[in-house]
Length: 124
Image 1 (cartoon, rainbow, N blue to C red):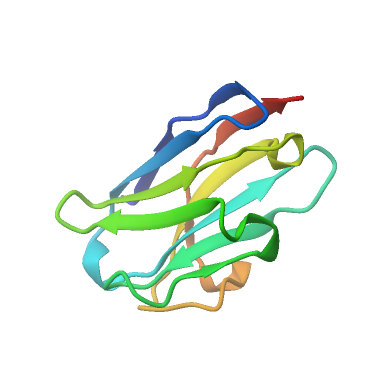
Image 2 (cartoon, one colour):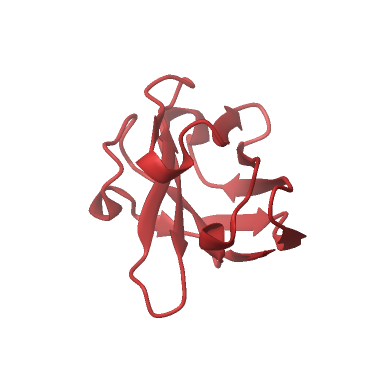
């Protein structure tokens, strides 16, 4: 049974940082691309970042470039999202996702497994 468990969300002020973690219970984690998505109230779930199986093929949505960093530790089956200089528009539920592919382009339909999400709220 596949499980993706996000942690690290919370309530912060603008300019603060958070580090999200996603612990994966999934076969062949080290051969799967991983991604982070987010969904704000009354908005569609959107792509945030993706990382390929070997830590390369990293992509970000334009609005987080220079502020967010995705990384992974295959030995721990964990993917991280370091979020710096958070802004109110970053407020959303953040979801971890696993793809059966070794690399992705960040499209939602490339990811077959999803976590339950962790809330990130940024106050101004």
